[in-house]
Length: 212
Image 1 (cartoon, one colour):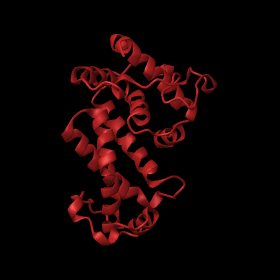
Image 2 (cartoon, helix red, strand yellow; image 1 turned 30 degrees about the vertical axis):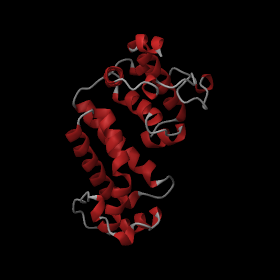
Image 3 (cartoon, helix red, strand yellow; image 1 turned 90 degrees about the horizontal axis):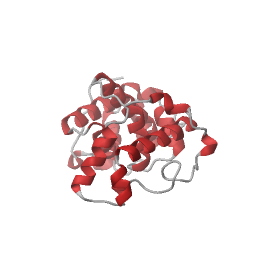
Image 4 (cartoon, rainbow, N blue to C red; image 1 turned 135 degrees about the horizontal axis):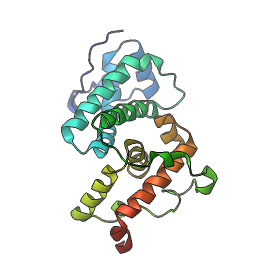
């Protein structure tokens, strides 16, 4: 397989002939070494991937670099994609691994990671948008820039793992099983991390919650 670095093309450059090709067909073509097909896959997902990474690192250049690294890693390992999940879920796992590893190296650490597995899944309502209460986080209802900055700063204090599940659930609207597949952990662990992350944010943003 040609291992050249795939180029993230501008939308105007994406080949029109690839625009209507089904996702799995593009994957098969890319697995055969077709870089144009892979470029089309990148064009379909790059905005969501970049947005998710940016919410994790809060730096445009770092987010762009990490997106590039993630897509390069996906290109190199695309032959291992078996179609057992959606391509987006598969690439999301790569993105999260790349981003979390980068954050660890930057020593962006949260606290009390030991709480990950202390909450029993049966204690959490799977239908709730955030565990264990169905109420939305403040940033879904408040637009004031100062409040948004407070929330972003609070999320930045979470460990990379807790930050990831909060953003994947609250920002990207992913389901528990999708988050579990993307992070390579159990649904129970996802629920536990969501529970702890939300409680941590409530403590950090107590005054914000009280005024919502």
